[in-house]
Length: 148
Image (cartoon, rainbow, N blue to C red; front, side, top):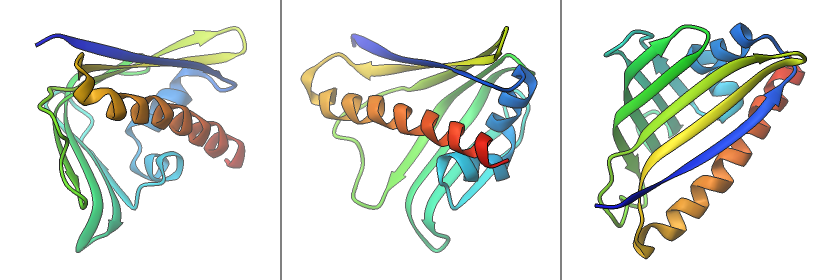
């Protein structure tokens, strides 16, 4: 199956180590992503999970396996399991998300590459929603950093 990627990148006014730590710290993930709960076992083969909504009846769950972890620089998530109260995706997909953090003169850059979107029109609406979702997520990271 032919697939497509989505890439989003922005600079943040904090050191790379601090920015990278936000990706693995459950309390930070709740803060910038608006999740109700997060669990991270920060090791290759570990789990990265987030929940939105009630503990006994969540609206959404995202669970991924950590495929690669280079502290301070790179995190790759894959083998996703999704749950949405309103139902699953209208297509089959094997998503992978790569986070790369690099130092800049004024802070650090976060680049997210989400791979595995089907190239066909059946995934267009979900692809567009993910594009907007990453814009919102990065805005959440900026807001979280300002509030710290």
